[in-house]
Image 1: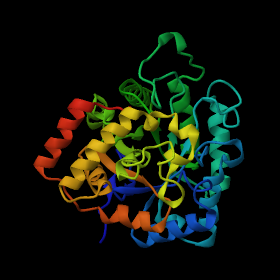
Image 2: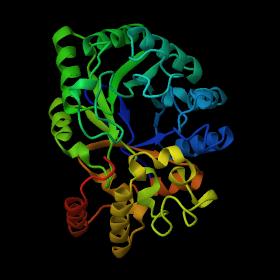
Image 3: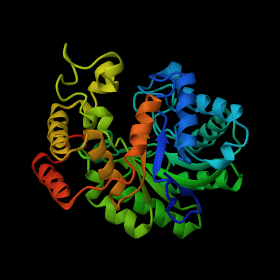
Image 4: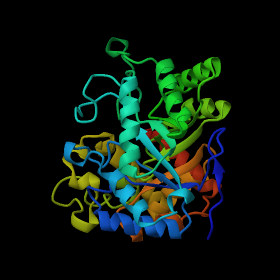
Length: 358
């Protein structure tokens, strides 16, 4: 099975519709196992890798940058492979409780320049194909927050200044194209407007959550990105494991929650349980979707991934795995379609349950 290649925005990047996410490399996944997953992903034809300077997760000072280092070591072991792949990484926004990522309260131009140089060094490469702002410099309701509060707004580096800084990296040959992550319709419009007005690099992608229990991208962002030709890189398509069915019987916490090899981030890390994916409402909705999948002869994973793989809104779906077996299972879903009846049933559940993991 071979994958088609899809364009990202107006760039000349052509990527597979499935991207290998790597944020577990260095925490849940050892370097040796990470390299085995990367080997298999390459052999299966995936040409798109995504990482970030703050990975691995859950975020800790001692593992900050470890994922990029693991990728860099893999590139060093396989001369010539780097040139075959589209490599995306991210510059972290303001600290958000992680002082080891950002010393100040904002994200300065110098922070962006320093972060890019550090990522290039860890990745052992000369250029980053897609450099993304991991989360906005300004205050936005992201990562499970719901409401925008003007009183909390604090902008130290304007979007115009961010674009000017990224333009320096593009001009220096360190970055080919730029993108956004965890953004809003306003943010996408403003980045595009200012780039076009001042002749600065255009953003080509947005990496936001998109899955059965979080379809908030469809609330105006899809139109924004469609009209401005900004491609969605959908992250957390399995909602941190909720949509695999592994938590259906025993829940996320407590004595019956899956542990060891049967567990995952939600049952292992208390910090993750406090995030949007750990909400009881998210598990309740996931159980409904997972039951629908089984009723229609699919595994929950198959239905959840097929949903993302076939949506017009999605350019590439970012999958995160902790084993070669998981990787193969996720890739094998490619080509599967969902019937109109199943899609209608999915929409009916969403109408009732909304987006509990927003």
